[in-house]
Length: 363
Ligand SMILES: Cc1cc2nc3c(=O)[nH]c(=O)nc-3n(C[C@H](O)[C@H](O)[C@H](O)COP(=O)(O)O)c2cc1C
Image (cartoon, rainbow, N blue to C red):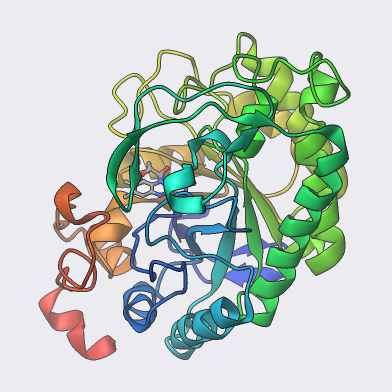
């Protein structure tokens, strides 16, 4: 049985271990969404992960409504990301870019334009903006004629990711973001070929995945889904057939891996009673499956041993423990993540989480 510390092939990449870093938005880019040098330090500290799935990264100005989150649509961003990817590679790691469109979760106070989505819906609550919290706005439904240019934005960002030195990309189709807003039936009320039945709701995901795979290689393209339970107000009345249909499409494209965020009833970053769909999805997607949410080493071992997962991704444990792989291997205690500094600017709670004392010389 493979352990968390054994290598695994993820498409074109060979991850030296199965302890993957989950994507974590940390808001350390500039106000104009350009990565900063401290991000190179942060990611290089975590280079012993089998693979770093980088933080959600906007594919266009319209896409990114999160203050100080990075993007991948300009040459300036590509150049700035090169520092990050070089630092990770110099430390022996692998890093891919998570391609992000927030859809209705983006706010005009950050993007300068009305948010777009599958349908004219608004997220409940307030968005974080540069001028404080502001109520989410009603999104403008994307016209079918606009879909090709949306797909082109994903392709450009994917090509830019490779130009920036990333080892691949992950399409963010989870957590109530734009593609998820098309997938699920409580946010998609369209009557055209992108709405209604399941075959129509999975269409955008399939088109984006195919176009990105054609541009950078299916073997360098991953996808993230969050099939079970509500996520940022997005939910589905019958998730099993929806997400198995999505898995079938991704399987046919031959993507490098599929990652699922599957919180349980006691989940701390989202909780749900909807059972996880990974056992079913496993039967439809035959490539490597990475599972996420609230894993510790015991649960990770169980899901690797049973063959349910090929690898496990850790979010908050990696945030707070740059040397997580070594700590898990040695059974060392873990630092606790500090929520107050998740999205704060600067080094505090970012690059200052301590390594194990005797591992310092390794990095
Ligand atoms: C601070 C923070 C930022 C996050 N940013 C992202 C993100 O950019 N993209 C994404 O898909 N998920 C994001 N997530 C979700 C994590 O990837 C992960 O699914 C979640 O933390 C559960 O895994 P864990 O229990 O190992 O932390 C974020 C979570 C946290 C705590």
